[in-house]
Image (cartoon, rainbow, N blue to C red; front, side, top):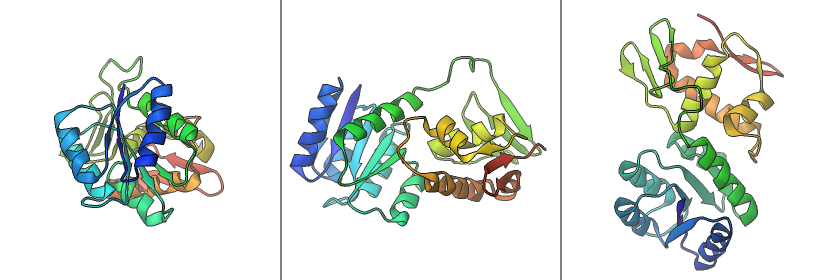
Length: 226
């Protein structure tokens, strides 16, 4: 497994690299967004750790360009700010996780491991082509594709995961803890606001089909049966 570590502060890069090596990862470093994009265009990575506030090209823009070269590479953003806008903007770009500085390098490595496990691909038992049809919306689990009226809906990786889990369990009341555990993993270090943000973004993407995601006050969410 190879990581790309991007931060304009050398000491932070060295700290992350030290723990990455200890966990058995290979790595390359970049000190700004432009350099990170150039490296990502030439070399494939299993995950990118990317600071937001950098000279020349900020983390959001760098993530967007890196994803053009490597569409499925997981990205973890680092930021000295904990603003909700940063998180929402990052999730809209399809960012897999978000870590606020100062952070524990050990916790960061746990997050790296969790994101990599979720990014491995199709889970065992899903080899057979599986789809669900709700009116004119088709959810293709195997192809990881969602269409409405025949047109593809462009979702972030986590929005796909969340929608797929909701649809697979349609008609069932799902608690917030259950959704976070199943979609983000038991070792997720965020909070309920992360789930709410993704539900909000997913509803926006689904348009008229957002009506199927029902909020259960004080409990969680349920995807209604057609």
